[in-house]
Length: 242
Image (cartoon, rainbow, N blue to C red; front, top):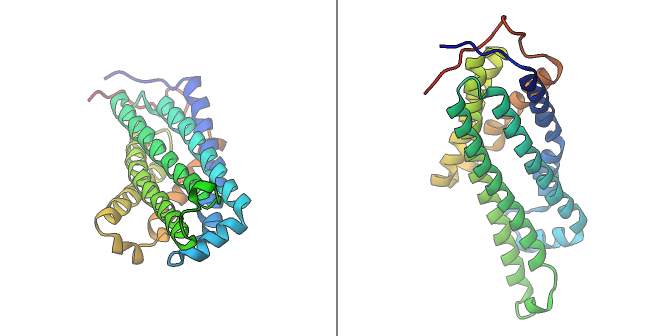
């Protein structure tokens, strides 16, 4: 078992991880909470009217999500750079799950663009009555929700592995890493359960499975941004092989 020394590239990558966690908070909340207020769950007509009346806001939500997903790739790459010496194969698995997560979430954005296309009033949609167009738009909004849910399943898997590696590494306080493992497992488990038991959404709201992961990402973001990884010889993890 060889000793791994933390190098400068890992320290720089850790700062990128912290900054990325904190940077995405505002656009993510804006897109998925503030802009999402335009959507009335059981009223396709009112939802369509809201989007048409606030089209620029809806487009800003799409743009905000794209920024978040672009930064997610930076985050995943930086996490791999920091944690690959702990257990490279596990870190690589987490990266692959993160790529799937991001690709699926980008698909959710494509659904939002489809909503705008359906409601655009283009000539080739004139054959449809207004209520049918509104229903089609609402279907695309539902596709966004479904894609986002699947993306969160893979986000949970990715985050569980990276948080486990944080725990093994001794790079950060174990309490923070343990919170990350718990929060990631909770998010991934709940969103996976919604696929089988969709009615569970009425009981398990986002506050329950989203709150802990939000607290973790906020905490580790500030910790990595304002703290340094341990200097060589103090808290150096051993390189493990599968």
